Length: 165
Image 1 (cartoon, rainbow, N blue to C red):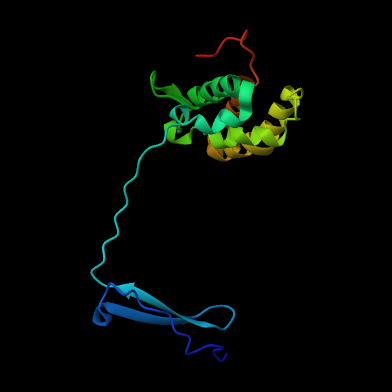
Image 2 (cartoon, rainbow, N blue to C red):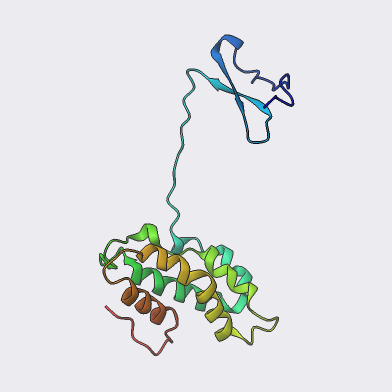
């Protein structure tokens, strides 16, 4: 296949002299050539910072009066997945599997203007978002379906219910 733009110019980074660049020409699926410059002696470093779901709840302000209730649900669910304080949780999971506030912000998609359909909104959030990701977390584990049911019960529990050990 002939190149449609073989002389297409891609500027090189001005911060590097030309002799430190390596050009690679390749052809993508549309038949266009592109050039990728690889910088030699370049080291890319990343700094990672752990974001803990319980400490990152500002985004839930959009839920208004429901914010505290949603935080309680999120914390109950995450403590059932893995409770760092007690070291208890679902075998094979840890706090990296906690469900963050972004999932719970999706509740706004299902609430009506006066938030009178909270129970229905929670059901839709579970069915459309939480169940799927939790199922994937549990896929292949021995007690996957039992653990998923337990997490569902914890998500829908009321304040009068007792949190299981």
